[in-house]
Amino acid sequence: KEKSPVKIIQTVGDVLKKQGILAEVAIDQEDRLLKIKIEGCLHRPIEDKVKELGTEPFTCLPANVIMMAIDEALNRPTEIAEIKCDGTTCHILIILFDERPAIL
Image (cartoon, rainbow, N blue to C red; front, side, top):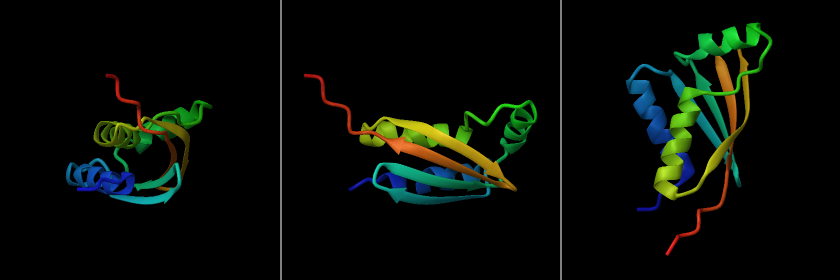
């Protein structure tokens, strides 16, 4: 069965919703860029506190789980390029790299 980053993100989002970690996930893929919107995240108050201290958000639990799932399922490394939070929404930009070469 063909796996895609978008399907993986949807699956992870569904699991995180069932666990009460977040309310909603939306995904838009443009080539190697994964644009993810996360609503109602349980960890959002931490990001707000970090921002109050003068530092832009630099990590995101749901994004980390998503990246781990993509790496495991597709053997493609990822990296968070940007996290922006406004209102109740976090906008995460993830870069999707080429598949790792197989080691013989």
